[in-house]
View (cartoon, rainbow, N blue to C red):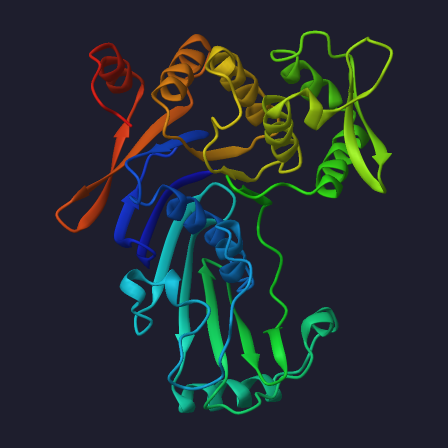
Length: 367
């Protein structure tokens, strides 16, 4: 689990430092303060040295297609990742976690012709490994003056690596193939619908482990009649169905947005043992009357699978429900992180159990 993170020159953060993180971390703050950006920073850091994630986080925000012009004066697809769009600087993220200790990720865009020529030479003189072949079309850059290249470099105590995403006349490619991350991580965006095939795959993995009971018990807080969840092919796609004892299987989407939302949360947790789950706007689709129970089952699942969760919300009801749920549990492994702007800088204010309880009872603004 992450204990702390320090972020420099990423999105809206010139510099942000957060420590004393817990298993469950709820991020709040005004619009455009950086809540989603903080989740994205964790996602990139979890992925270690995979530059493909730099494009994926923009897709999470709905920017799924990018026009790329191969000219030295045009923008790169990654300019928006950098603070104030200043691509001359380097993004740095340093995190401390219980799996790999302190890890530092540096992200920079290579623009100078001499940098690109040096990269082209180093890639062509380095022996290729078998596992690098699937994404390694050709290591030679097309025209160094027009190639778009982002570099991910990763360091920890006993290991370091670099990987590049290159876009030139040959198309996009990753060189060399990045190593596997140290632990699994999922990002559930607020505006992106999860494909039925992904839901079915995650349900299947949980079923193979014999852990479907965790999902079913969680969903009973919304639909007490639920007996089982299973996959049935409908219209050529695998769709999750529920059995509530009416004699007819019901597609999960027809059982309401809350059922779909809670199902996806528990499935992500169950498929990320020992890892991290990042979820934007966690309260969406969940009625305020079930929020406290929802927090309880989410916390139980996170502890069962040893998963650390980072989530965002705009809802005061969601915050109060989380505080109540964790206060009633044996372990208050929960932190509220409020992002706020001071002059031009964004800082994190941490609420533990006592300070959050006092703020809620005094009706202080914590969102």
